[in-house]
Image (cartoon, rainbow, N blue to C red; front, side, top):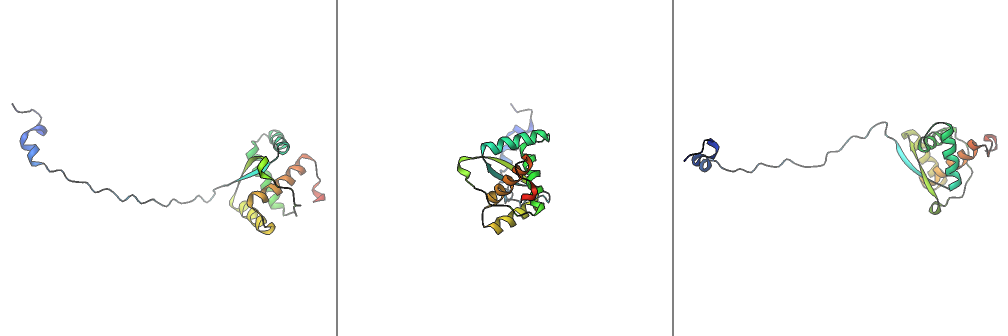
Length: 142
């Protein structure tokens, strides 16, 4: 008895040959980087500084990350001379700041000028910015 489906007939099974299909070349493709990509910077702050940052961010109806990003960008553009501050990242929690390429370049320039890491330079600028914004220091004192 023959099958009704021609695919299963004995003649067909003998005539078909199994061929290997060559696999495509799986080299990783280089992706383009966005021109408006942001650089994430992790900044260590003390508990008190984090609380102040959260309160100031809430006042401006922003998230702490967005607020720190705007504040850091604003103070980077001002080109003021920032006084050294104590930096101890081990016992502190961190906040993030997303900087544009131009702001990140300015931050990098400061880190080279001060001979420190990018995180330490961001900490130095943001600490002074938080003091100024919270009313602790007048901008003229800098």
